[in-house]
Image 1 (cartoon, rainbow, N blue to C red):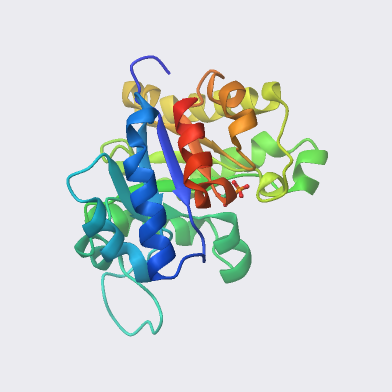
Image 2: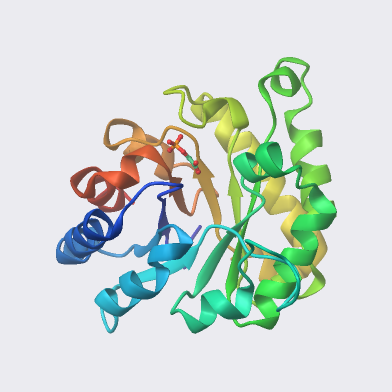
Length: 249
Ligand code: PEP
């Protein structure tokens, strides 16, 4: 999107002990100059957010969480709140990832509440949407994504510079991607939705593509209209691959 700085976000998922995580973060920061215009973000497991943020402080690579609770604090054993992530040095948080939706039964209403909590804590939410393979085959991809956006984006989303990530569930970790025209079609539908909901501001919110983005396919995907960056899983665990994707943006 013209005038929009692409965001290349790495979702480390449940990978990374301290030494490996810090080494990966430092390797990404060390090569960040190759990313040219793109903004870089790494989202380590919660245990590493503070140390990775400290290691990257003052540099070009931002840090984010992978989820947060909808409450700021309370009796929620095992959960991490948005103010805690912010306090640890995070600036972004991924919300509604399909693995959260599948493993923890998160629906759109839960994602909406988390997005509100994240914004209240000063974090930028990255709200993930995307259809299953059955929904894609039934011709329902656009309807599913539109419904998810309706249900999970809070009113203040545009003001907070919120990010939408389109991640077809069947493309995550599988090595499969939609065709370029299918990606462009969904991104256009998301853009239309953002404009309808947020007006002019919706025209410049970032829409990321995620699902088996690799150095080999990054350039073609990132060149598509309304693709303003990528959410990268597997390839974000190898600094050279993550940086090659960023260089393609
Ligand atoms: C993800 O989990 O957000 C993702 C896109 O994973 P991968 O790149 O491994 O498909």
